[in-house]
Length: 419
Image (tube, rainbow, N blue to C red; front, side, top):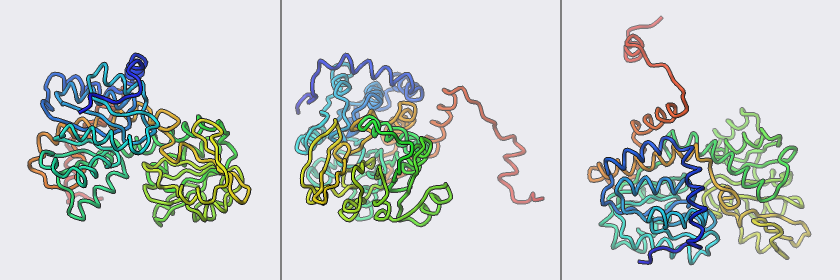
């Protein structure tokens, strides 16, 4: 197996400084890191991690290494890598890393194969690409895998589909479903980092624009609220009646995506589904419309359909591709339709990734201890881990809360007492 494949190891010095900067805002993971260094709960466990290679991820990899894991890292998206961080993971943490920002699809999957060549006993995925390849192209290695974790909504959806079809061969904990993940990472992290990515790519004013959010899950909620807070008129598109009703009650206009296509200035998909913005949408968009994606895969935007409609295209700015259509209008695709918060920005703030990656670390420990008792299904994060992380985060923030009195506990567990 190749030792690593990164853009330039000379970038490592810059990368380690970014990693240290992120660590300042990751006190929960820092506490886990200290315990792991002492107890070595992952000793000898081979872990293949397919994650966004960012400064926060590097702190997770250091935690796993200090916990005794034999870990390798590859990117979970071709545009999400921070090249200096990838170099630092190799040089300072001795983690074999296979990741280059802007890598083509062939290189992306070669890098995943390099991680799989490590013969992992545990997988740590973000989008389930690594797990999917293990189950299709490297089935001979499945016997050695005891379990895994999954970071994001799209990956959990794929894994649950695998489990429903009876093809999933080992247990996986859905880290994304932890309250200390999706209520914070998905909502506040995605909301802020997506706006950040759009601003860095375009330098456009959000205030006064018509901002279309496709999908009102936790990521969509966070994004809609942030855009509204910056002065945009926000339109939400949805297929779920309950979420559509909630968006309406939250004060947003709700309409089908084809109707929104006529009036939107900025469009962002956050659904986890395919072809959310389709050919019929592109033909209705006004000249100068900006289209971005903050869901895991660029399939949320029907880029092949747009290609057929396009007469001419060029990169007018970094991460901004202008498509001049046959009808004379121009549409601007940000970050090649990939995760814009990582393509043109730095991803979620360290404060929220602190909780997400604390879940990853503790769930890896949980899997080492319990995998043999678990069947090949997708499991939620144990509530005890969720609660522990929330308590540690509050403590780090200097926030104290009340505790139930014996009388209150008795009341909550009884049925005799009424008015």
